[in-house]
Length: 164
Image (cartoon, rainbow, N blue to C red):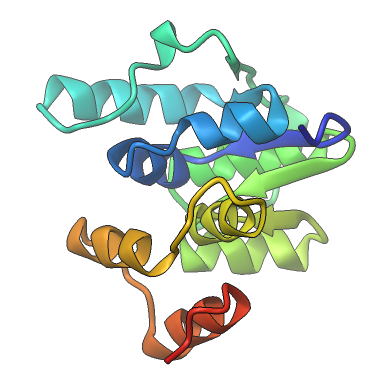
């Protein structure tokens, strides 16, 4: 477990890891994950609409935490989950922010935040022997509609030692 890191997640990584049957990796690696209210709202709406999403209320290792109004200032042009996640990461010591949205990742990086995402979590899981092969996980993600550019996919597979 990486105890010194506080993980804050947006909806995307929680959703995709859940659909892969790999959500438990977050608990295994980090102990707990913080989500802002907007992420819980997005997930709950998705569940009501019949989507396959994790029921946050049944996962005691996921903690709900609202960002301060001050931390929200200056974050514009993103969805509410990304905005609140970035705001929480700005005010949380040693935060690792899980985001998949490209624009949100660019903004978080510009703010000096440490980021990862679904692919990063899976890559660490492969490196630690939690999953044997990354390629089938990437194939399944793409089947779920996850967008992964070919050059990025190749780089990830090279890092995992699975490039052809």
